[in-house]
Length: 157
Image 1 (tube, helix red, strand yellow):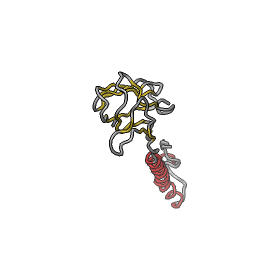
Image 2 (cartoon, one colour):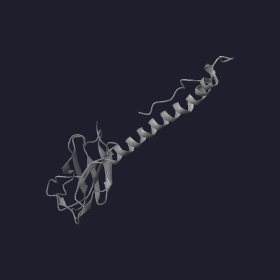
Image 3 (cartoon, helix red, strand yellow):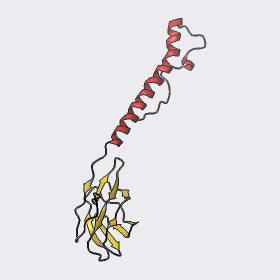
Image 4 (cartoon, helix red, strand yellow):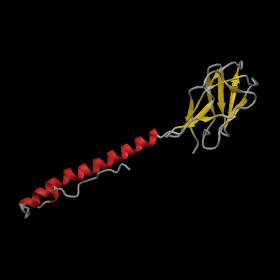
């Protein structure tokens, strides 16, 4: 993908000072460079279009299996996560009614969705800590409808 065009196959500089080519051969020599460039640019465009199509194919959300008394919050905003085409994991949703013990695990991310290093990020109503073993832990003051939106990080591997 995206190969560099380091030079043209037929170059004017390759011609002798006094070419012995016929006018048709000389014209072909000059016409070759734009055609090589056109072919090369079309290949780059095809590669870019394929990359864009690959990026647009994003996996569906995965509903989190909530632990320690936590349940999905109000409305249709279930606790969920997904990994985008560039390898970032996104966590979203609302939770409520679970244990407020400090550092309680609210759900566990499977292999392939875990961070390479610890993640600690503020959320509305507290903080989320994501361990490299996949534990998503919560530090909150209360357990009334907590938003876990807009948490994202690069997945390990």
